[in-house]
Image 1: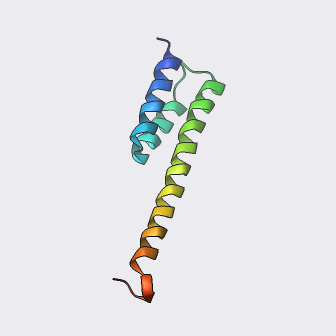
Image 2 (image 1 turned 60 degrees about the vertical axis):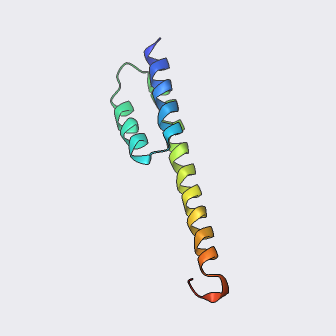
Length: 77
């Protein structure tokens, strides 16, 4: 398995786990990975950035839905 394949598997695993801190750590690690070309690093980092952004939007939507559910009728239940 090539280094790029290993990195791709690690990125897939981080995205699947959905843990933002793990994805951020991997972003930093990829920044210093001299074994990858600039384009390969960028591609893998973009995958992580997209997953982080999606996770943030999803979390915000869930919080808003929860707040709406809790405040039915104008007061917090």
